Image 1 (cartoon, rainbow over the protein chains, first blue to last red):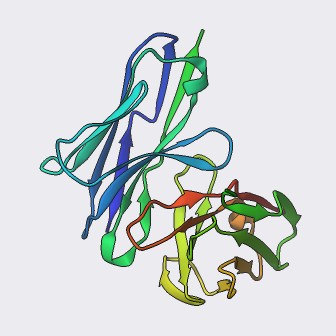
Image 2 (image 1 turned 60 degrees about the horizontal axis):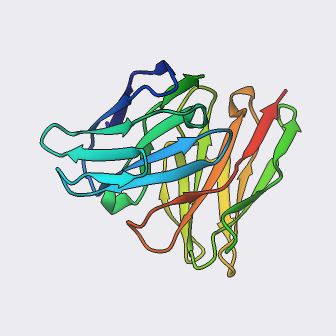
Length: 111
Length: 112
C-alpha cells in the first residue's frame, strides 16, 4: 500500500528559530514529491521535487529530495508567526496521476 | 488570473441526504481532482476527471460520483450521506499529467 509519513506531527517554536520537517514515502510508482502549506483551507503550493539532491529555495524556505532514502525535508529558517500552518507532503504516483498525502506537520510559531 | 474556485464554502446536511459540490479549475487547466480531508488528516484522493471522463478513482464507495463539463468545471455528488462524510472537500486542477496541482479553498461539509 502506498504511504507517506510525516514527522513530527506537531512543532512549537519561537520566532527566529529554524525548523526541519520530515517526509518519508513508500510508493509503487514515484513521479514527484510536493510540499504544500495549509493555513485555513486551501493547501498552497510550495515546492515540487523530482530529482534527488537538488535543493529548491524560496525565500526562507528550502527543500531537498533523497530518492535513495525515500525521503524529503523542508527547512524554514528565521521562522515568523506567519509560518504557522500545517505543512503537507504529497507524492505524485505518476502513472495514476494522483497525490498521496501525509497527515501533515502542524507548526506553531510564537512571538 | 482566477485560481481554483469552489462553491459553496460551507454546507450542513442530515444523514441520508444528497449533496452536490462545485469546482471551477484554474484558467488553462483541464484536469480536475477531488480530495476529502477529514479533521486532523491529510487529503485523500477521491477521483480525477479529464476530458469529461473519470480517469482515476481512489478507495471511495459508489455513493461518491462526479461529472466534468465541457468548460472543464466539475461537480462532486455524494448520495446517502453518512456522519463520516463530514470533512473538507478540496478540488485541485492542473494542466497536464505530472504538472503541479493547485487547490481551491474547499467546501466544508457537516453531516448531522
